[in-house]
Length: 462
Ligand code: ADP
Ligand code: MG
Image (cartoon, rainbow, N blue to C red):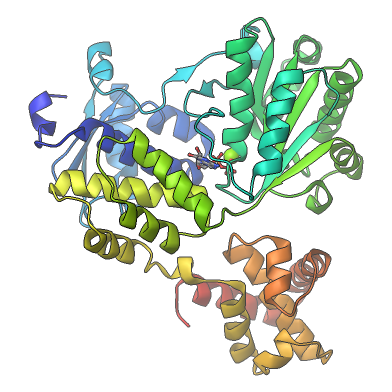
């Protein structure tokens, strides 16, 4: 990267661009499969952005060509709302270490595990520490528990199970435990994996007849961090192996920390034995942050940023973005980057304009109540009945479809959905979801209605 290209007369354009690219990467990682992500996107870095063209540096010639030919459109799509609307993407080869050095990635990675090669740990990110984690009523218990687990490490609270919706800080909290241990007890053997990597490692070990090595590896672990365990659901043999690994580690007093997107009892597709094993440990949930916590999180972000963000703007963002912390961070990064690129100070007006556009996205407005309204109208039943206790067949069906779609189209928890649609509990919502799933498999007409409703709500056509 030539320093000139990015010399926009602003405080830290490289940092701002890296922040935006990190956000784009996050979105990309949900759109392509893991090998594609690892080969083409993970080690690609942002080189320049001039307001119209984003220049990227790919690690190999092959990746460069592939990105340019196949993935430009996707990159543009994932940059939506972050960079120019009619964005052009150029990809250069950028393998030289000096160049990489000139554009430090936002989250330098640290390898903690000294355990060998074959089933290696996922490196922890330096960004995720207890110091950078803001505590509020939504995460107080999970945070205190995580600290306790990191400081005692005697396997008393085993497994330690953290759950919560997307973007609420599960990964942050889990990696904070790892990072603290890497600092205070560097001899501790730590393995950090995800449900997905566990599956891959296990399948590879079976294929290569190395299950013994696989098991041996885990026997030497002192603390086992497993993120997104829900990925192993419905993979029978993997679940079985996971159960035995968990059981073994717990028996010999090694600490296990597990994250999932749902409470153990709600991981319905997971083996019942595993679920009850999860429940037998220390279970802590992460809820959505309230306004004060959202403000505190943004204040922390602002402290770390070189750009000045006025208090009223922080409050504005915190009010507008109430879904999860990841969305909150995304909004903040976008605003800081926009102000840098456009050389405009951050004001309430700028925030209102920018975030207004960002969050006019219909999806952000979709909530269980709105879904119930749309479903009731489409099915010709009374909304009041759907939200009430009416047991008429068609009304019950509309209610269940609304619950099913709310689960699909919002980040709300089962309890939140139940509360919004007639004050029911999570078990009712879960039952509704299963029933609609079953019905859409057996009844074509109903499947079509549900599909149409899904598309209409998702596309903001209501
Ligand atoms: P999850 O794993 O639950 O989907 P993450 O741990 O990846 O969520 O969090 C999403 C983003 O929000 C991360 O960048 C993380 O650092 C940040 N974050 C979440 N909770 C907090 C918090 N309490 N304080 C500060 N940052 C947070
Ligand atoms: Mg996570």
